[in-house]
Length: 114
Length: 113
Image (cartoon, rainbow over all chains, first blue to last red; front, side, top):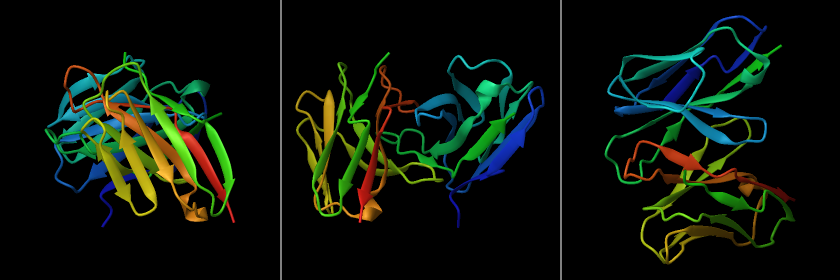
């Protein structure tokens, strides 16, 4: 069984469009994250939710809006896509309170904006 | 902001060679984690080091946490093509929050057969 899954795996779209990426985890974890990995492989946190509550928002443009309908799901909606949004987006989850916060990552969504 | 500097950025070696990659910071971390990311996949946790001076072994991989908890190293003995991947170190942010990890920029390792 896949622990953290994301859809779609690949997303190609034009500038100005709005798109969503979905994430689900079946690990029973309380905390979920969105990361952005740029072309140089730098992995940077964007958002974190704990039990459906936003706890980290790392100066991400407000065109990006996460939503957590329940603690097993964290979706990312992006409005008015720009060329600079092209990257691989990773969803991750962890069990809150775990020392060192081991994170489980999804397979990533490669977003290409043309 | 706590930063983690990894070196080297790229490393290409032949099968059977040994190598060491480094993760350094000017800040103290309560723990450090090492992840490996294979092409087209998400990072996977290899190990967490918690105590200053701690050494952990995972088959041919040896991880060490510096005495001052500001740096860590990963040594691979007799590297194999299956070790190819991006190695990332990460540490929890200051303030004690376990929710946020700061990642280094990674070492991209290629092991040639």
